[in-house]
Length: 108
Image: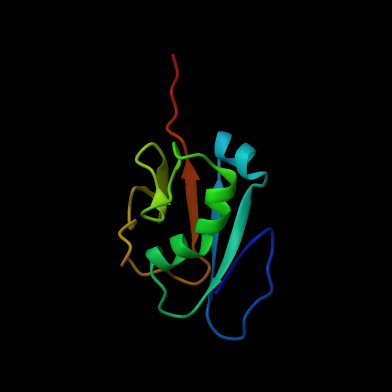
């Protein structure tokens, strides 16, 4: 299993999932997205474990819950174009899936 900033080499078997960051998260991480190569049958929790070292290095506790290896409640995670959808650690991933991660928006 590999997570990388930018592009990483493609495994012969398995899946690649993209995580895209918006807003201040993009600034803190220093890039628009990253890709993770995971074994076939991986779940959302496997992805979170793969990106955990980078998240712990780049973003603060306001955005990343390091003890539970997940984004904090202050962060919005969107899968399948649904906000908050499929973020259960056991939720299966699909090869080529893109997950959007961003802070809530406010306006006035």
